[in-house]
Image (cartoon, rainbow, N blue to C red):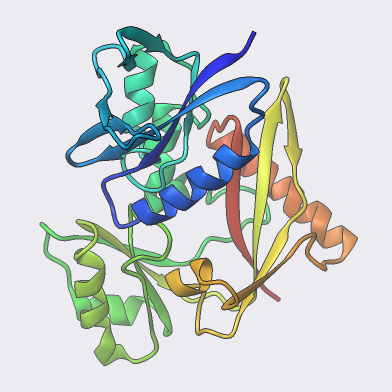
Length: 282
């Protein structure tokens, strides 16, 4: 029997445009013989299904259903394709948990924790052979000493929103005098920011999935760009970055990275498919 699936896209952050692109790719690859897919757009104005005739139909959030031509449509599951809030920070996950509706991502607790870079680093920091960048976390509504930060951390710094993605609001700081401007830029995106010491090395991303109780670490992808770092433009503009899969790394290094990635997956209580970014230094 065909399953009725809601494919969620949009969102309430600057990453919504990436969500739309992701949902388009997912929709093209879902098996039409197995799934009836309804693409649902989430915005600040509401949650809508927009069929081919472009008449928006609002989702009933009491039970997450649609009414089309007098017929009520309820979903068997949800494919969350939203970058940023509310798709990656546990909000939608908690909502669907209350409705007892299955979804594709980690659960609400893990999603909320892993959206917060500082909390995530604190949890995974003791995993064997995994090194996290030295950092300082500051808050918009609390005082901080910028000169003390400069004394505690070595240049260059990466300044980033603590709860953001896609490198939005992120800066690489190579001169102490530029730190304050980078902090202001990051605070425009989030009320918490993270200031990290730069880690030099090759950049990779790796997928991990758990199916039928077995964790599988997928081949790593190496990311290379001529830009100073892998920013929003490098991530989403064709030709600005090169991605190589599988990455050209020694077998012993590949096995070590896979072991660390699996440990991160377990420590954070992940489920389904996740992606882990890392720097291979030395």
